[in-house]
Amino acid sequence: MPYYLFQKKWFIAFSLVFLIFLQLIYGFIFPTSGRADTWQPISAYLPKFHGDTSDGFILGKVYPLVSKDYRLNSDSGDYLELAKNFNSEMFRGHIYINRPLYPFLISLASLPLRPFINISYGIIFALAILINFIAISLAVFLFFKLIREIFSLKVAWLSSVLLIFSPFTHSLLNQPIVEMLTALMVAVSCYCLYDYVKKPTPFKLAAYSLIIGVFLLGKMFYAVTFFFLLLAVYSRRFKEGAVFFALHLVPFILWYLWVTQVWHISYYVNEVQNWQMGVWLFDFFRGSWPSTAKILLSLIPNFMEALIYGFMLVPVILSLIGFRYMPMKSKNMLYFGSLFSVFSLGFIMNLYLYRHAFLLFPIIYPTAVLGVEKIAGSLKKYHRWLSPVFYAAMIGLMIFVSQIDIQRIFNYLKS
Picture (cartoon, rainbow, N blue to C red):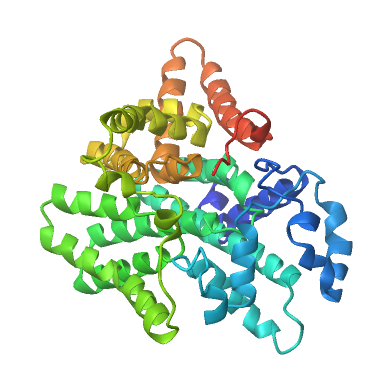
């Protein structure tokens, strides 16, 4: 195939979307699911699927093609119920009252269909997977565009392929939960940052801050906030950092006011109220010192574990080699600032999830490819064939280990 095709926008878009579609199909045929006590088959976890004629028709056509090992994440039912009935009564006392964006998008996608068909759980499930597909497609395309502008076309292609065939995408693309939207939030945030730094304007600052704030209504991944504020302090752009912080909270404030003043519902954060995330900080000086010491001593090991397992080790090792060859002056700040931001979020939550650590993909995958390039280049002095063989072997290895049923090895999807 002529090389110039890989530079054409239509070919790039078609190729990336096609690869994502292959990953989606592969994920249903060869799924990776979590623990059997919390991840249930469709028939067991969502029996309402069998209560509607249209659902029965859909399942009759599609379900035989899905692996018998496919199970739904424990959060799926909550998201699907909110999407099917996006109203005040459904949100009253709901654990995801602080995460309205994902079910809202699914409900919004169902509006054109509502005059013609009954919107059942089966339809909502299909729309959720469609939203996932669109979200990861946009994330990959933005990621590709960003990496091509900063690094090179080759690094962009390989990094995007690694993202598509990552353990994160393989495990969660076929689940009606918010993770693909979170990946899109990270990609959008990175691109907004790059575009703003390239040519800063007050309009961009306001618009991008609000966009990021809206995405945070999907999932409170405030590592993005930490990273932006860290950059503002590092570059001494204190005023811009303050404006960003204030504006990116506006969507949350508006949603909070809508919930409490219009719907008259008590607003709470499930992660804090039921899981005590962040509460330990308030008891830092009041709690027993052995418990506090145990938490502090486990922070770095837990973060490293999440990072290693989140990427299946190999990309992390290659990234540590390749980050030194990032083509930018502030590479240390960007690289280690990203790591520190995710570490800080886990520190506050006292919880390091593998899928949270994976959201460092904008910095890990490109530098991993640079690491492969560096090692492959050094192998040329021994034998010319060693370089392409090593290159193909490393990329193939990273893809292969990401596509196996990793749940049989360790609990990648622990929650």
